[in-house]
Length: 141
Image (tube, rainbow, N blue to C red; front, top):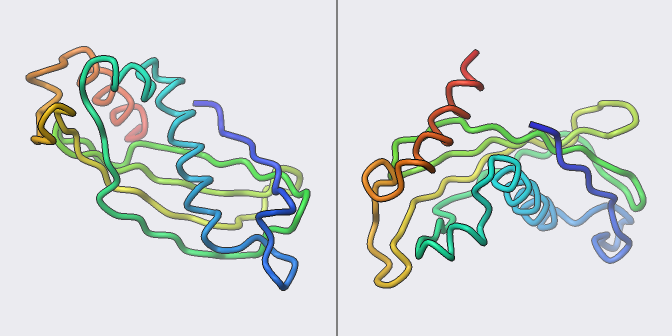
């Protein structure tokens, strides 16, 4: 997978001139959307098929500051996948130096959008199940 690049914007900074911590969670979402698109099953496809994948939890560990106008690359990887739940890991690095800025993960489940009931992709959408299973296997190597 190609890492997602994000140029830090002025509005993302706080009173100390660094990127406010809440923005890293937004960057995770941007990178996750990009990952799903690269896998060929973007959120638009999920929604068109009648499914959603809400966030169940987020962790974020800050290692070094990002400042306005710096560009970071966000590497995403599937950490675990059960058919019903998904964990995605994120590593944020300075694009120019490769210095580690942040790590984190998000946890998700899969729901049928019509009634918000949990579903197993293996059962209801085997093609998506195979894509996630393959991505998980690729990360294990």
